[in-house]
Structures are given as C-alpha cells and as structure tokens.
Image 1 (tube, rainbow, N blue to C red):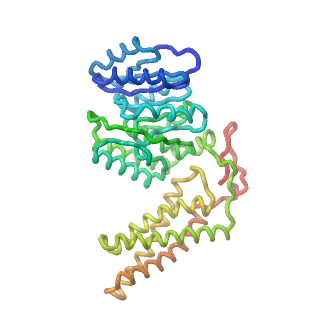
Image 2 (cartoon, rainbow, N blue to C red):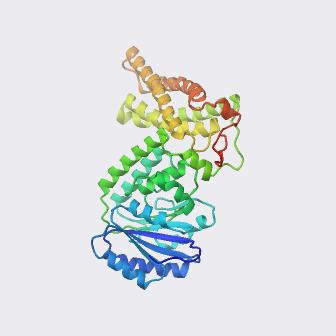
Image 3 (cartoon, rainbow, N blue to C red):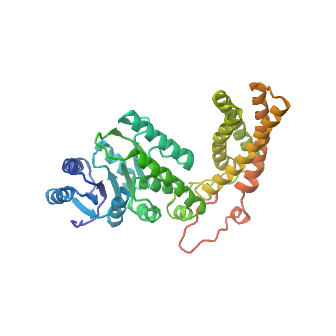
Length: 413
C-alpha cells in the first residue's frame, strides 16, 4: 500500500469481489474524474474481499499505473467486512465508498462529501428514491427497493430514504465511534450503520443521484432480503436491550437542539394531546373505512389502529411531551405498543358487544361504536403515556444527571 504524506481529505473505498471485467475501466474512470473535479486531496482504495479471479493482479497493476490508488487484499468475503477493514486503517478526514460498477453518476461525488469536509454533517448518502433522483432499473428491483425502505421506516422509525444505495460517505471520527457497534459484515452493513447513526442523533445528509442499474449484478435479491429482515430484528432487539450505547454516542457526537426545549405544562400537554388525538381519531376512521370492505371489521380495526398508533406515539413523544433525541426511543416505542394493545382490546371488545347486542349492525353503526371506543382508548393512552411511557423522574426534571468524567451530557428534553 502506498503511503500517504500530508493531510488526506478523502479516501474512497471500492469493495470488489471477482470484478476482473470492469475493475480497470471503473477505477481509471474514477481516478480521472477525481483528478479533474475534486479539489481536495484524495485516495482510491480497492478493497478486495477474497476474489478468486484476476482481480488481484489487475488491482496491483492499477496501483503502479495510477497515482493515489491503493490496494488491500482480504481473505474473507463481505462488502461490510471490506469497508470496515479499509475505513479502520484510513488516515483520511472523510471516508467514502461506491460500487465498482459506477452505477451512480460521479457528478454527485463532490456534493456527497462537501457537507462532511465542512463539518456540517456526519454521514452523507445518495438516494435513488428522492423526488429529483433519476433512476433506470427494472420494476422488480424498484419494487423491492421501495418496499424494503418502507419497511425500514415503519419498523425502525428512521427518516433517511435509501439505505442501500452504494454511494455513501462518513466523517472518520464518526466512523471510529460507530464501527465497533456494527455487527454485520455483508450487505446489511450500510443499513445497520445508518440506524445506529440516526438513533444516536447524528446528522445524515441525503442527495438525489442519477443511477443506472447494472444488468450484470450478481446480488442474490432473495437471500439479501432475508438477511436484511433478520438484521432488522437483531438491531431492534439490541436497541431495546440497550446494548448499543446510542445515548453515550449522542452525548459525544449528537446534534443537540440549539435551544433546549422545556417540557410543556400539564395543561399544554392536554391541549397538544387532544390535537394529536383528534387527528389520530380521524385518521383511524378513514383507514377503517378504507380497509373494512376487503378485510372485515375486526381486521380493519386492528390494522387501522396499529398504523395510527405508530404515528400517535411518535407525535406525542415530540410534540406533546417535548422529548427529542434517541434516549429510550425504542423502549418508549415498545411501551407504546403495549398501550396500543390495551387500546385495541377496548375497541375490539366494543365490536364484540355490539355484534352480541345487534348481530346485523350496519357499517355506520360499527364505525360509530368504534369511534366512541377509540375516544375512550385515547383518554387511557394519555394517562399511560404521561405516567408510564414518557414519565419524567425528579432527577431528570431538575437536570441533575450524574455522568462520568469527560463525557458531555445530552440536553434534557
């Protein structure tokens, strides 16, 4: 590996496995582009994870032919493994990676790394799902990508739009803090890194990209999807158990509010909760009517209440009770599901009672009964959210938190 002298601003890692057909053309194209368009110092690292074809010899020849191109050889497969190894050994200020097929237009590279070099953001990702993104790929891959990212948003409560676009960058100090907590070494590596980053209060910058599908892609979509779902379950469990120290990372690197928010008064909480509850009740009614015809009353009730409960908990956490940041986020989401189960039991029981009293009840009567039961469930939800889910202990209310020496405290929400 060629030594780098002086301060290195950017290192771009290109993970490869058996890429003899495209490696030389892609690396040459990337190096030429960086020479012409990248004003900061840069280096390209070819991260070979156990290739068995002519990739090693081609990569070695490229390091002799092109300046600022280096080569790392690993004996273990996995994109995440290659990135972890190269990023951990780097002395650059900003670390990036992109797929060797160069599916993403390189014109997006300067705006990808600029907010990291300036210190404005912590992680920067390209998104193929943005309104201004231009993407050329088949309907099957488009459907799978959108479905996966929708599942990710609904289950993990994240805001970034595209977890698996092979076009990302991260500040080196952030990478050093996050990498020890990322367990996956395969395709789920990106998603896990981003989930931990967002839960830790880090700023993730997204840019729309122009992206053309590689027709020679050898990714096993079915196996990758299975591994991703399994990874989501594992990460969710780790966050609930507290084995990932998101609070400590937030205290060290997280983006705190410019002005710490004070917790609303009880009267303010009642008003805000009523506003959220009103919107939730209307959303529930609309969803129930939408699902009722095809699913039946009980199933429509469950699905409508589940969808509104997720949004209700998130809105009440921030708007009603003034809580920001990652602290206890997943614990509170789990407790919110318990409250949802209680609310569902109330509304389901109301349907059972209605059908017992009037077996031939109309859809309108079912809706009225469920709406009334949902109002009762909403009142119960406020009480449980205030005294259990979002309860503020006396030590938190007085902002007298005890921390270890040298660790900055996160603001009290």
